[in-house]
Amino acid sequence: MARNKISEILGIDVSEADIIVAKAIDGGEVIGDDFSDWLTNRFLPNIVYIDESGYARMCVDALKILQTTAATDYGSSRQRDLGQLWGDMTRGYLAEFAFTLFLKEKWNIDTRLGHEQGSLIDYLPMDIHKVKKESDKEFRDPAIKVSVKGTKWNGIWFDIPNQQFSHSDVNVLVKVGVTRDHLFAYFRHISVFKDKILKKGMEIGAISQTEADFLYEALPKFRRIPAYIAGFVIRDYEYAPLSYGGSKGRVNYTISSWNGPIQAGDLDQIKINESIKGSVKFKSIGSFAHDRGYLFNTGNLRWSASDCQRLVINRL
Image (tube, rainbow, N blue to C red; front, top):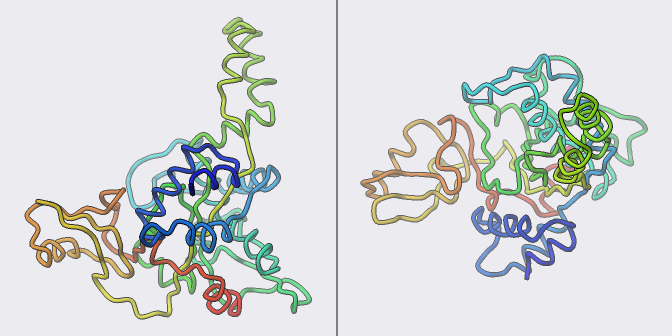
């Protein structure tokens, strides 16, 4: 089965592999029951692995800009504490780093990311700040602006809010195989808990050695992180409005695909088009925090080597 092969090759639990397969179906990446074609030709060729060194670098890069970044989730008013913000930013940086690994491993292109102190808004349109192909003598500015966004294994939507889509020539989506406790796993790996926190707890009498050992073993273990370059979309293409697909229930309608612009009033129009008395929701997520921008399900992303060569590599 596809999940067993993914589990074995990526070195992850079968339950995690189940999520990958299920979301490939939900996102429209798998056509029919042909898991073999998706696995062999799309998923595995677009996998890269982030090692401890890469994780540490992105963790520190996120820390550099942490104090200058708004604590609210993008597109909402929900406040994040500093630890959550750091974890979220690290995950986003891991997606960018994964794409640089992809460019190097698959296309022998060296890159530099724009992870410097300053306003995050300055870097939104262009995550790849310098490139060096085999034909280049030194690093140079890329000829196109490439933006990279990360999501978890369970993501099936590439949501590009407001005017972000028009600011970049190419928008890339990367699924990063980290859970919400990835920082804890790394801290365990570098002995922050064992040699600092738990040791201090024993010194002040808060816990016994047995309790400290139990807590330590219960912490998640760090591993190299698989990342899947799910695909990309280009700005210079004629996208049709209301490019949706889905299924109609007895009362409600579930959108499972989208391929282009989305704006206020679109869901109301779908209710009219499909004669829906109930609600219109997006598969897996329900709704988004905004109603303007561009939206794509992963099945509508470009991902083939020929598309990547023609629309990204040749233009960088």
